[in-house]
Length: 359
Picture 1 (cartoon, rainbow, N blue to C red):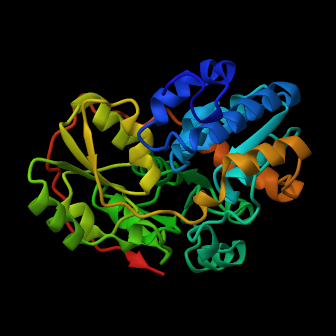
Picture 2 (cartoon, rainbow, N blue to C red):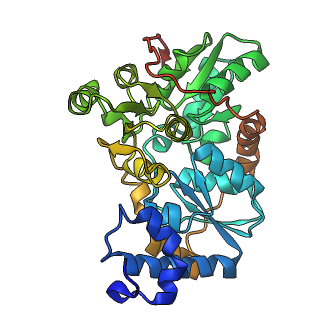
Picture 3 (tube, rainbow, N blue to C red):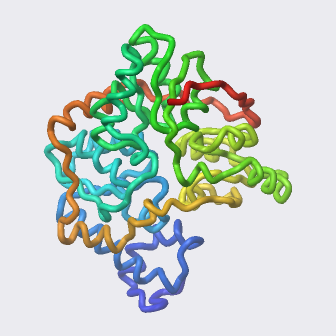
């Protein structure tokens, strides 16, 4: 982009040149001056407020690359929240993530730019539901996906993410001395885990509204149109999608896959912004659709990030008794060794149907 184009000052252009290099394929030159100005203002407000921004992989590229201090999946962001020295944490993600940050940082101010940024998984189960599940299956550990509210985490023995769910389930079974584990609330993640472990899985019928819409027909259409493309699917997708894909893994695992294999063409069966953000660091790879957009993640914008920092608004709080019980479950997850990253990623990982007990 030429110096001073579209009203961009030379100073602002210099300040945001590195960001523009990463987002130029996803932001038009006409939009960029306004976005660059917001990025500059947000970064100044972060310094003024002693704040950091935790940006999930599903944030749009302008947020992910422009203002995110820590970027990644739910597990990575939870760990960064626990380590952060900042006094203010802005969660560029959805509400359950902000609650997790508050649980891990009770003495810090946690803000979310839009308090209505929710999650279909988080609303699919309540703390009262978990209490009933525990009464029905006494003595079995409850492993809960981090995509849940604080009151659910408070009823949980240990949390997991899609990156470490198999590891956590096997740890819980060994720690409790049982051969079955309750894994809630994502039904498809539970089925995916069951295909990779000998531990019996009791699951809940919660689903991610983004990933449950993908079908095996989507994969077939992509293979017909792009026969050389490598297809990666998130474990929140239905079993038929995982079986048809070349690789199934968390957002972190998909990023690692692209970094290690450097495929010429790749399809990411997940939220739309994920591919856009990974593409910035993989210039030799062509990223092909389809994708589904998360309406909740897209409630977070540069403008409302700026406003929440400017006015210190939309603080997220968690009752201390709930936070104290939820903290144990989250901290147990964080304290486990990192999930093993394969030395290399092989194409075509066999998937097979494994029965789970669905509550």
